[in-house]
Image 1 (cartoon, rainbow, N blue to C red):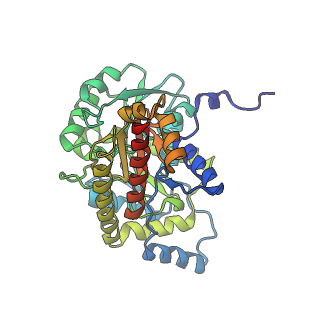
Image 2 (image 1 turned 135 degrees about the vertical axis):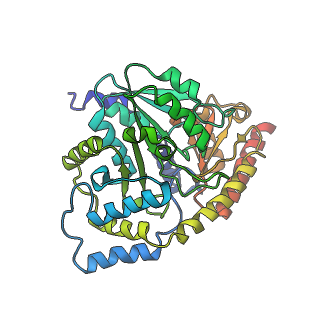
Image 3 (image 1 turned 90 degrees about the vertical axis):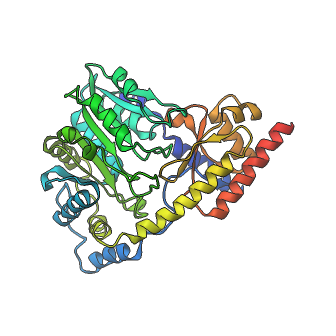
Length: 398
């Protein structure tokens, strides 16, 4: 009997979850495995944020539903954040708070896509983008980028991908998985293309905004292209910046029509995000931001170390990133050295023979690559590089 929806046939399991599960099985069997697959900060949530949550619980203010789209004080904090850090002005009716950035993006797609609508997604991409589009009834249109252009979509490629069916474009800067970030000039060039196509909505995923170290300051797309403000949904959250992944709290600012529709979707699914997480997020956004800068400093040190180490490995090449806590390495030559057929088998080889779990690039739309999370200690990264080099050298000698 067929009980499941046909739409599930179009969706593949998360590559990051798959590699984490494999590593977990090996660990349970007694194997010493270093997991570089999962994408979350290894730091603890700052104490002032935790204390704000505890206070809410102790005062009995956590036991009731809130407004579906977020409590007023959190919306106000988000509005101040957008103004203070991004130069963007929003009203409360333009803000929605969701159970993580993933739900915010999913709600936006569910609220706007009709069968046949196309969504342009630069590749490499975060693994969930295409599948969320598919679940919402749309068609993902991948635009390949290359190592040569820094894994960033070029204006000509964007123009070529646009059709009468194009409804959205989604891009993530700094990028998971590559760490690449668009400059102001590059965003403006993409905006010039989109100005010629007034029916396209732009979703910018700024989740890694504060894990960033490029020479040019971070800038949001809507700030660079104010002419497109009425068509831009700027998404963000507290997970990465404040080490709050488990708190599940994301948000966006965008057109009232779309945000209102997103609230309708959310009202019939999860309803409001956790009242405790919302109160904690108010403190996170309003308080002193030195904790964010401190974590970013450590991520930058780890980035420099892991990228330099990867480029010393046989058959591995890795560009420097501008942010995030991921390194995205080209392993096409290393795949040949090991004698595996593709990046999936290569990652399996590293896990089985080296005890290091990485995510194959195919899961991000970039075969021949691997993603490593450096959200772990320097000692762990040192050992991971040692194991990978030992594994590759052994394959060379065989």
